[in-house]
Length: 154
Image (cartoon, rainbow, N blue to C red; front, side, top):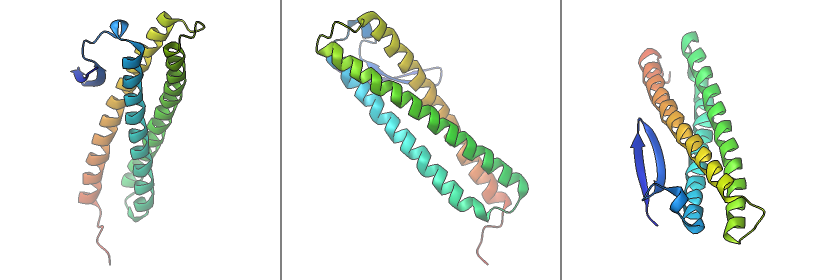
C-alpha cells in the first residue's frame, strides 16, 4: 500500500494511492488510520506546547490590544486542541472497529464503517486546514507584537 498526499482547495489528505477506500483491504485502511492517529497526536502536542510557550511569555506584553489578541489566540489554540482530541477519540474507536473487521467480527457493518472512515477523513482534513491557518495567525501576531512592543530587557 502506498500513501499519497492530495492537495485539493487547500486541504490535506493522506489517502490510498488509488484514492478509493472501498477497494482497499482492512490492513491498508488500518495503516492509513494509524498514520492519521500519529499525525493528530503530533499536532495536538504541538498545540499544547505552543499554548504553554505563549502563556509563559505573554506576561511581557504591555499593550492592551496585543494582550487581547494573544488571549484570543490562546483561546483559539485551546479550542483547536480540544477539537483534535475529539477527533483522536473518534479515531481510537474507529481503530477498534477496524481491528474487529480485520478479525472478521460479524457485528460490525463494513458499509457503515467506510462511511464513518470518510467522515473522519474529512474531519482530519478540516482540522489540518484550521491548524495551518492558526499557525499563520501565530506567526502574523508574533511579528506584529515584536514590531510594536519594546521587548528588550531593561
